[in-house]
Length: 444
Ligand SMILES: Cc1cc2nc3c(=O)[nH]c(=O)nc-3n(C[C@H](O)[C@H](O)[C@H](O)COP(=O)(O)OP(=O)(O)OC[C@H]3O[C@@H](n4cnc5c(N)ncnc54)[C@H](O)[C@@H]3O)c2cc1C
Ligand SMILES: NC(=O)c1ccc[n+]([C@@H]2O[C@H](COP(=O)([O-])OP(=O)(O)OC[C@H]3O[C@@H](n4cnc5c(N)ncnc54)[C@H](OP(=O)(O)O)[C@@H]3O)[C@@H](O)[C@H]2O)c1
Image 1 (cartoon, rainbow, N blue to C red):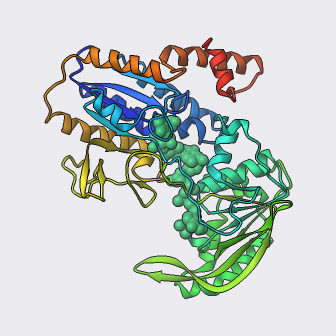
Image 2: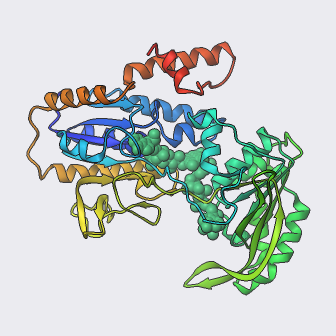
């Protein structure tokens, strides 16, 4: 335990949890990371597009350096709450002085539309986890057809378009956007990857169709179009004939089809744009139409897991409105609004605190700030004695309740095996696609 004075559990070893662990260890805490997945990294490992090798390798290296600290333990393949064998209270009662929840946004945001549960209607997260080789998603079949609607206009939509256009090489990708072309959220760099497939004639007529609404909302369609197309001169050479197009000012209202034949169209309601207090909102016109397709993928952001033991508001776990240990004017303390009380000793960070918000750098900053909040709290507590005993007792409990807990030695074996496979197959990167294969590689 070295010179550690405090004992903290972190649930979730994505970027928020890992960078928080480093900061807490620097502040004198012994940290135990519990992670649902075998491997650490969260969406940095299983979200970031697989061919961003440089970014992924750089992050993996940083995470490895974090885990090299003797003050940080790693327990992978351990789910807390959410159907797992341990719950938040177990951690609090076992001697951990504080628990930081950094579980990300693992729940699915349903729009509750008729037809939403038909085959070939998916949520982007599952497809992202599938092509990024995260079990069990990697082992499931996803029935992706030829004409695919993707709902949403963020970078996740762009990653899905990237996969459909450059890997699956489908016939058509139609992006359905509830507001207009000025409100899309994806970045230029992501458009460069798929821009060569953009159907410019279709985009021109779509701009023509929505220009009246844009003018009414005080926008200049010509300027917006220039910005929209700014990535095209730098677009990567195409590798498929996929037609890539956008439908603006359209909100999904129903998925049409049946259980025998699957999806045949997405019914949408046309919207107008409304400027309210400086924000542009979509307002339904009551007019509906159908967009023919055989698959619908919702890329509209995620929500946190409902089965965790912390109340939810606005897709994220609730933070106290009156924090006792604020950092940068932000509350990192979990709160129960039903009884108007903080959840003592429980803190939040990353996408668990703000679902689907920001890049890895944002999650890192959030994790580090949350760690500061935890340290402020710990400094009001007496230093802990008998840390070894707490860890030992808890280890014993875990071994009794869990089949295979993955530690740092296992991770090192897995990493070596995956690097060897990549070299053998002359690939930039290789991942085992099932837990069984990963355990076999670890001799576990
Ligand atoms: C498709 C996609 C692509 C992205 N691409 C980029 C990119 O190119 N560049 C960039 O900078 N950012 C990118 N991001 C954003 C970035 O990945 C996130 O900002 C960041 O990963 C959020 O970190 P987090 O730690 O809060 O959550 P996550 O990364 O989701 O980590 C959560 C961790 O918690 C664990 N966990 C979940 N539930 C439990 C539980 N009950 N018990 C125990 N452990 C649990 C999970 O196993 C996971 O390891 C992308 C995001 C997505 C969705
Ligand atoms: N390559 C990368 O760097 C990369 C890749 C993936 C993700 N990320 C990051 O991860 C974060 C999350 O990305 P994201 O794409 O999930 O979220 P996002 O950027 O917030 O985009 C979500 C999209 O879904 C739409 N939407 C939300 N609710 C809807 C509804 N009920 N009906 C119709 N449309 C709806 C939004 O429209 P409105 O605007 O109208 O709300 C928006 O277009 C972002 O910070 C993103 O930059 C980065």
